[in-house]
Length: 184
Image 1 (cartoon, one colour):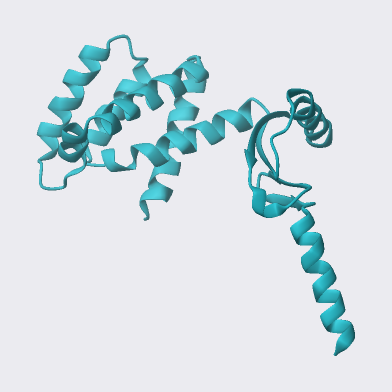
Image 2 (tube, rainbow, N blue to C red):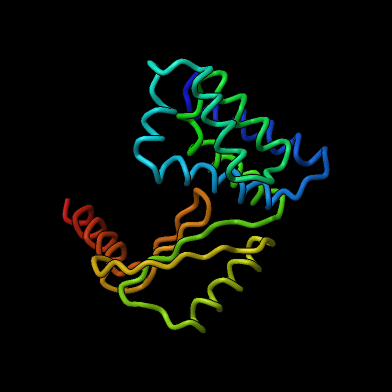
């Protein structure tokens, strides 16, 4: 099993257990991602906890100390972190966090979208895009905007795995394809 698949399974299990125990699902995400950031932010700690040569009992002891220092972690989060340490699976923590976030967004009916434009958008245009995408999907939209001058003009919107390419660059490519196929 790939580490991404394993992370997905752990994320699903954490979400299901947290939900069945009535835990604050958003707090679970904050605690899990915060713990992952602590590990990622300390190079020595990251190397020790993800190194297969370090015995699992030592990793568990280190995670126990971290949990004690952080303090107040919800039961499902601390149990999962200890289990990952025992099974020497702490390396999958970043993928697990992303998998949990994805499940949480689905549960909260939130979809992520990205809009790429050639020039920065005004705040009112971003709000209008967010509202339009929310009406189209029937979900709340977390909208990220990015500027890429290479698209010349227009916009490229990514909503989940769907891409809406309304860029001038793409329109020019379509014209070129039409002209080349007509010339043949």
